[in-house]
Length: 535
Image (cartoon, rainbow, N blue to C red):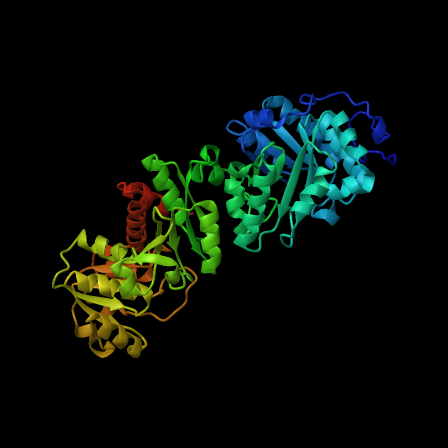
């Protein structure tokens, strides 16, 4: 190996030729941790830290977490902070640290040479006390296999890593490329451009993860399932972002979310898997609601967001993971219908599905709980039989409202900007079209907004003016934000209201009870939704 001096190493012992390291061992620089010991001491989640605040973040989290990656390449002069890193590890003897100093050409921020990179990593182990160092396979290929022995001589285990920030190529050859160097751990991280890419990653883990030396996950929203389920399929551990801060790679999940929401430390092969599917899916509140429900009910299950617009891909993922139940959102509510072996009456009326249940024979039963989500909150306050109900809108939510209300004996009146759509739905469901011209002089027992008006980031026309809100109870199906313009309008007029959160929670309650056959923890689900809407 070429000789290289460690740049800017204030206060450190002299490091001259890397191949002749004679550094004094730091607080953790001992024998390489075997996989089982690493799992027992560090757990399943390594928090990736970067920037000037990373040491403060590590110490803030240290009372409840012990496993951190320090991205030294994110600092202007990595060598000058190694004494600081050593002090942190000495103050927290149980902390397990991974040092990474990735070069710019391989997705990092370090602008030095490969030799300088190895100097910094060796010092991070021998002087600062890091138990593991992460070096790219490209660096090992440039400097030769002996570089891994150099790093081990410093007292660290070597993670040999490979990243693809653009997609997921064939992964078996990548594994073989890394395995040829016989590192202590192999790390493979591609970008998932589809859920199918994530399945390829899980397949790799199942083939090679049994020894506990493979670390693998997919970046991006479509790779989230690999971050949560990776350890179940054989990944030595997964990476998380620090709470309250962005991660160091696309799709990293905050530590609290992985640990408290997905309960990653308790996921085993026996853990049941449920999910919500749609595109986009990142803003869905369903994972917060249903994972909270499973925890409150003491059920060994995890609920994941799956981003896809392809029903066939969803079927492949569901079969591969053994998913027992699915929430379906846009744009899949109609396109999943061909997947169903049996279906509820609500689906026949709605021509849309928002819930799938895996039958004992593996086939799907479909239901639409949106109807219950609208009708149940109303029936908790009034008897719907004979009531005059105005429904604003004529889309999918309006359809659920109309059919649900008509089944309870209500008189339903439809008001929609496009009169023809309202007329078509009214004719099909036995409702009536309400003319806008007579709205201000018409009184209703209940008015329901099923339009997107008031929804976060939606800018559409106002479906109702104050003098037209002539009702005894107003229900806005929009739940984000919790307080909508129409709810404020009703309250200013002294009209009792039902917020859209009630609809979202009730449809989720029906899903939970359909999947589990247990009574849903309704209040815990409601609080989970409200807390996340408030963030």
